[in-house]
Structure formats: structure tokens, C-alpha cells
Amino acid sequence: FNSDKLSFGNSGELKIFHNGTNSFIQDTAGASFTITATESIAIKTNDTEFAIACNKNAGVELYHNNSKKFDTTTYGVKVTGRLAATTSITGADNVQIKLGDGDDLQIFSSGSIGHIKSANDDLRIETPRFNVLNQAATETMIDAYQNGAVELYHNNSKKFETNSTGCFVAGSLGVNPSSSGNLDVNKEGTGTLINLRTTGTARGNISSNGSTVQFNTSAS
Image (tube, rainbow, N blue to C red):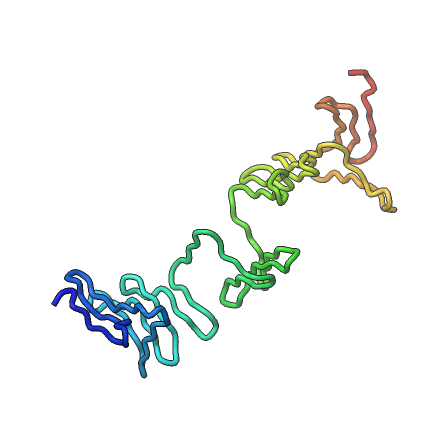
């Protein structure tokens, strides 16, 4: 009858019963509850749908709506579908996240350095904007825009920028003083002049064949 209990143990620690709505196997001993079988163990819902399958000498399987989503394997675990975390996924130093058939992409921390390593292929980042910041996310180091400029910074101050006609340097463009090499300015293409300007005003030019060097000495 409903709520009648089948009890086992000196003090009835293990009980099996039905309360009219739900069925229970209840252990009140405060110790481990063990299920053993000489073969596999299956827990099903709705009479036919797998929820948990424990396979003899093999893996444990977890199901969602009778569709297998999680397996234990000889190398660890296998997830079928998407793995979502509500806080974080953690690993010790040098524990790697490996992606690709040949473990081609590896992401890990060696303790003091974070690594994104492409073992066999190019490493491609696809994004409408690529932004590299300092650790505190308070300073920009690199900023690259889709269909636009690439910007390089020094101490959060933009120093180099590409544009539709070439590039722009904010500040001085120098040669390493310890270098013994020359500073070469090479003009290629169909234009005939190398122009020198300050604040947009022409200050001088050099002809492409080097025959004419001209400077505007007027004060403006």
C-alpha cells in the first residue's frame, strides 16, 4: 500500500517505498550506498530512455533526453555537444587545451607566460577589430580595424598608424644611434617628387632622379 515501507537493517536503515506519487529507495545509515552488478548497470527514465549507463570494463555514459552527451574514456572524458561553464574552466601550469586532429592548436600557461601555440599551421585571428591591451586593460598597445588603420602605441600613446595613402608617425622617426648603417629613403612608383611637409605645408622636395633638391625658406 502507499507509504508502506520495506525496511532492511537492524534499525531499518534502508527503506523502499511508494508514497502515492513517487517511489523511493532511502538509505538513512549515514554511510556509502553501493549498487553492484556482475554486468553493466543502466538507469532509465520513461521506461526506455537512458539517463545513466555504467558499462562493464568500459565507460560511464550520461544522457540528455536519451541522447548521449558525456562519456568517460581511457584518456579522460568526451563531451558530445557544447561544454558550458558558469564560472571558469581551470587547469594547473602546463596543462594544455588542445584542438585539431593533430593537437595543432594549444593554449596553456607555463606559470609565468601564457601561450597560444599553433604547432603545424598559421595562427589566424578573424575579427572586425583586433585590440591588444595591458594586463589591467587600461592601456592600448595595438589596435587594428577592419577596412581601416593599424595603430601601434607606446605607453598608451599612439605613435604609428597606417592609412589609405601609407602611414603616419606621431613623434620622431629615428635610426638606432648604435647602428652603423645608413638611413635610406626610397621613392618607388610613377611619382616624380619626394615632398617634405610640416603641418601640411610644403617645405621642400627632391626629384625622383636626384637632379633637383629644393627647399622653401619662406617663413610661414
